[in-house]
Image (cartoon, rainbow, N blue to C red; front, side, top):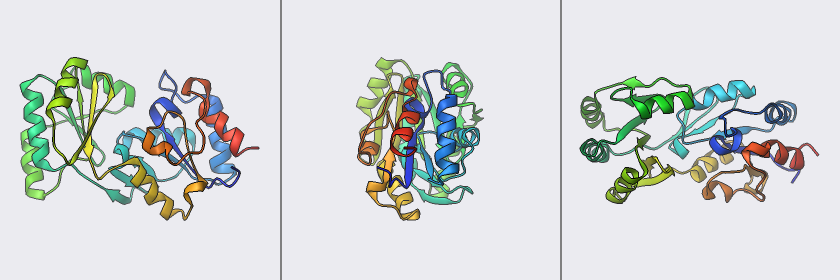
Length: 249
């Protein structure tokens, strides 16, 4: 596998360890691969751009990023390469359901994270991502997006597992990709968006073959389709182990 020409790294559960940190070993190996061997290292995540760019700086890499599980792809200069959004009428329906059942809702569009107020769930997410959300009136946002004919890239609902299961069972829109990323987290994205399609977009940009891409660790199945091997866990420096094994031989 010494013909690798692009590396796709999931962030949470792969690049970051259980303490939400990048180990020194992983940093050093990525630096050798990205800057020493000039192989693009692409960060892939359900996160917003702000939640990815600061990790790129920490790693010392300057490449495109895949945000919102593929709903937004940006080049290294933040130029949009690909974008999908949730229909505003779906947003309206989801908002009513979560308000009626006292479930937290976060709405993400481009590089903004909108909430209605700071509370337990938004505080927790802010600490994990190092991002401060923007307080907004969601009814006003919805009306604005209706006029603009647009919508958000992602919705994140957070609550107790029983309420998350209730929400998942009661959201039936066919044009939404709805999945629990944690027992207390429900991620909602447009169905046209996927990490697979986003990787495919960058595959064309860098003119590499599927066989020349390696995807890392705890990535979802749609990313693992691009991988020929699965490495150690994020707490065992799995990213570093795989890159050393297949690229720094």
